[in-house]
Image 1 (cartoon, helix red, strand yellow):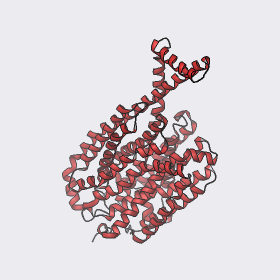
Image 2 (cartoon, one colour):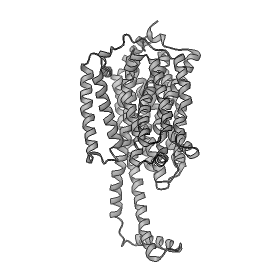
Image 3 (cartoon, rainbow, N blue to C red):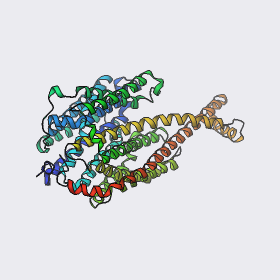
Image 4 (cartoon, helix red, strand yellow):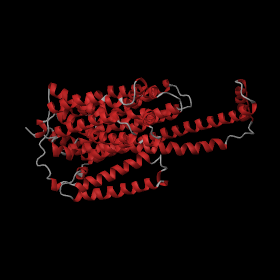
Length: 531
């Protein structure tokens, strides 16, 4: 029996391990988005500024992306079961401390450390689930894992909105505690660690690699999270962090390719499928987190919905993805090529984006969003499993954990890039459209005069003096222009997203040339697919 076969679980053990891993992945991802709707309450109770409270999100994301690439190495040092259990414990303890925080910077520090614990949960969960299933059922394994990854970002806002509305913001952290305790006990009891060989001696640990990785990824994440707030390269802080990110990344790559025992094994990217998979994971993260960000933002800022209403709008799409997952897993088991399903997912996501471009108005109803979001749910189901399966399909042994770390990191960075670019694009398009609309708004135009007079009379009928009613009419007209400019800006974002995903379709289909080779590799790898 090979080491890969020895890690395959059956019966109730596999069910328990799968549920434990999914809950851990779900915990980590829900916590990425759940605080977004609670920031205003946090700001009020902690006496923080808007910029300061934004660090609650940024610190967690930085902790996440720093630790993700190191998860494979850390699993090797401490044993995967021990490392996974320790990560859950760290995540749970700092969830409690986040709820207990009495100052904004205390909360930010706890969120960073919570992110350090949480970053490992996602990647290690994926590896544990993949290794617990035999090779012929790994498509289904990725479908099960995908439930947590795709549904998590969608569940965060409505769950956070509900908790904040009916209770208080510390509860969004406290709900992690019972799940964390149960997950820790189940991990220690049921999860097994593969035998990696000798651990790295303290003298041989790649401390410089760890430092360079933290500088590079941490600085990049800071730039992406804070760039728009600080007006990008007009801020000296953003420039310094950008330089640190570029130099840190350059020296990190050099160090890892030259050091005898690197902290991150970059050579695994020689695998063609993994290279394609990491690129697709980046694009998928861009679309997943970008769309999860933009739709609630639009419905709340333009349509005036509550956070709970905006969050609940996304639930049908998440349920659609959940329903799709087993079907996609079954299709993969029957031999449908990953590339075809991924290309179909990209195409459907483009349809969703173009649909959004068409329906957006200053008063779009919730019913108008329904089928558009169902298409998004189907697209995400068709993208996640094929992309993940394709990425890890020809990796063996310890490479699987390394590959999962790369795809996880790229999905996270894709989301950060997506949100950063979308906020910048909205801001700049808003200025453009407003300027364009104002230039066409001639006060001597009879239609404009008629509109202003109608607004003036409406204000006067409410008891307003004539001179004040005139000013109010012009202010109202300015508000209409601003709102229309914002709608046009959101439309531009949907059009750009659709174009990005549509352009990727032919490139994914080009990967199909290795079909015969993959069949041969699959036969060879049946018994020794995993470490």
